[in-house]
Image 1 (spheres, rainbow, N blue to C red):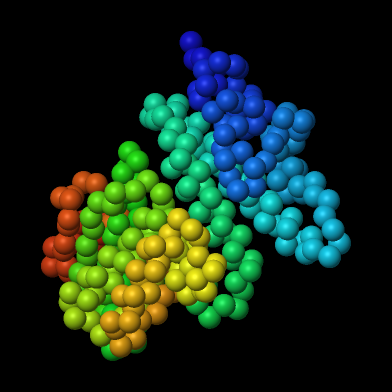
Image 2 (spheres, one colour):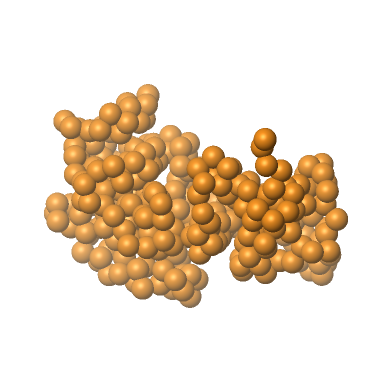
Length: 291
């Protein structure tokens, strides 16, 4: 007989209010984010209650603040947090996976920041609302970067491509951190180091981690403290190139690096390939990219 107990704490029956608000494994997630939210006094029982709460969060603010913007960002925060909890529940049910609270909070905080900052960066020249990979100018090599996690181990991937879309080199390696934001920043550092070794002169680094790209392009004062040393290293490495730019794109415009990072744990600690010997799943992503 299937157990009715919460798959996260195994202490109480699973219900909407218990799973998403009151479970002892879930409360630290709500509290551990920068917003430090408490939900003990909320009366949310059904799925409809949660849906109304997310769509129209009860906010009372000073009229001098942008209420519409704050509500939109709060909705994003709530929706992503609930999605995170639901995914953890499914991982516990189907994979018997334990919760790594630090990794969960870091990943969730990064996703919330990226989504919320999209409201603040409309028109920013560094952000391009692209949904497919686009080629660089003929004289520029584009370096797409991404990060994948398997059993709390991070892998970083770099894909170098020329203006015709051909892959010059694909690389992946393990990364000794469980912080997604740090891992994304280290991926950029590695991309610059590889570009320097290949004696590339003009490059464009592209990734789907908006917080990281904004930190590189923005003022030092706005860089999150946990990636400040890595971003400082990035800015030193940039000076060695004739031209070097950093662009944020959606994940759909970064598929080759995404799939390479996601599957990197199956490869040797440091993996290199090119057009002639691409792994099948990378080759398929690349062909779809060329469209």
